[in-house]
Image (cartoon, rainbow, N blue to C red; front, top):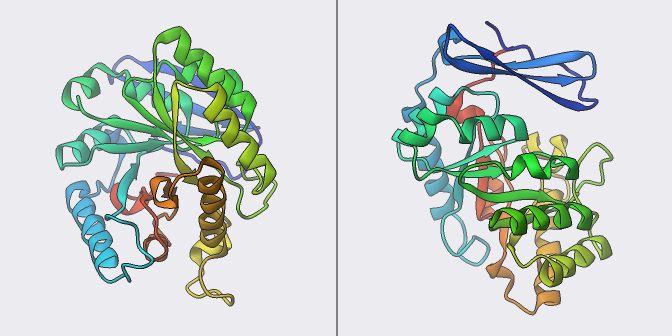
Length: 293
């Protein structure tokens, strides 16, 4: 089997099917006319050393944090979220056995399949799952089937918040949420617009969604900002915007800004994110290797 990743992302359709002779699930994610397939670890030709990679990433996070001015960094070293999307459950188990506990997934169907897998549940009892991909409101009931769901990081509308709250009430669930902010203004990016839209959503979460704890804010940001070594205006503008939005939310809620998390920074730019106060960095490729094409 191989992993083919299409270049166009028009609409997400989940097409799960069982591969009996391998005893695993193969999940296809269709984007328009192209298809992405999650393959078994046995199909990989170059198996990454996940334990060593994980240790290297954690070491780099610690070094960046230690070298950062205490005035700008977070109160404690940022959490590492291991992004395991499109990697097999065996990779998740290997990372878990190396000490990792927080994992992020982009696709709801894949998240549900992994979190409810019998072997994974047995071998990774304390795993904590984060949804870091866009969540359509119509998928809220499917998302609610996730086991050990810790954080939904992509809440960007009152409608989605209401759907999630309904599932919490119906199923006796509770979890934390981040407000996703579209800091780059790109139409293809999810997230609430900075300003009134974000503050209106925050008030709604506070007043109408008691089963969900507002834990912070997150951004994906523009790719150009992520890969740039230097920015003409100084720091990554997406990170600066998210910090400003957090301050506005904190003022609205009358809490300290530091009480709200900043989920920002990925493999290419988590060093700068740490320097600016990130409390969570999201790293996938540096741990699990490149996703097979």
